[in-house]
Length: 223
Ligand SMILES: C[S@@+](CC[C@H](N)C(=O)[O-])C[C@H]1O[C@@H](n2cnc3c(N)ncnc32)[C@H](O)[C@@H]1O
Image 1 (cartoon, rainbow, N blue to C red):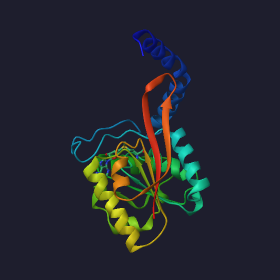
Image 2: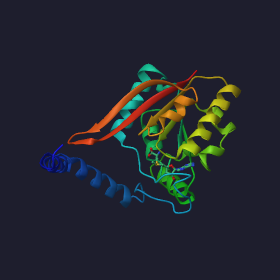
Image 3: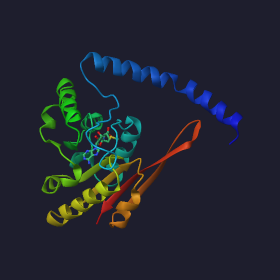
Image 4: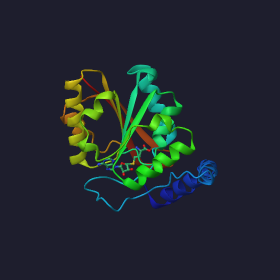
C-alpha cells in the first residue's frame, strides 16, 4: 500500500470511529463517576516473561464469539466460564450479562484483583464473584475442575500458556467433560494445537480502514 492510501485510510479510520469514541468516553466517564476503573494497566511487579498488560477485550467481538459457542458447541446455560487473566473484570461482567450462570477468573496482579472486586461490587455483580483467584494461572490445578469454558484474551506468554493448557488437560483426565477454549487475539495458537486441542472455529478479525491490523479469534475443544 502506498503512502497516500495509508494516509487516506488513517483519516477515514479516525472519522468513522468518532461515534464509537464518543460512546466509550461517555460510558467510561459514567463508570468512573460511579467509582469503577476499567482503564489499561501495566503491573510493574511482574515482567513480560510472566504476563502481559491489562486491556479489556472488545465487547462486540466477545458477544459475537460467545453466540457462536452457544449455538454450536456449548449452550450458555450449561457454561461454567473461567477467564485466565481477568484483569479489572470487564469480560467477567459481559459474561454475566449474557446469562452465563458460573463466571470466575484468576488474576496475577494484586492491585488489579482489588480493582476487579471493587468494580463488581459497584456494578452489583459481587455475589457471582465470590471465587476470584489471585494467582499465576499456571499454578492452578484442581481449581480448574469446575469449569468447561476457558477464556483467554492473549493474557500471557508461551511458557505460562503451555503450563496452563497442560493443567486443563490434567483437569479433563481427573474430571472427564466437554471442554471449550475461546482464545481471542490468538498469537500462540500453535501451543494449543501441539498439545492436541482441536480447532473448531477460526475467525479473522479486521478493522475497517486498518488493513494491516489483523488478529484471530479461535475456538478449540478438548476431546
Ligand atoms: C489482555 S488482559 C485480559 C483482560 C480480560 N481477560 C478481558 O478480556 O477483559 C491480560 C490480563 O492477564 C493478566 N495476567 C498476565 N499474566 C498472568 C498470569 N500468569 N496469571 C494470571 N493472570 C495474568 C494481566 O495482569 C492482565 O490483567
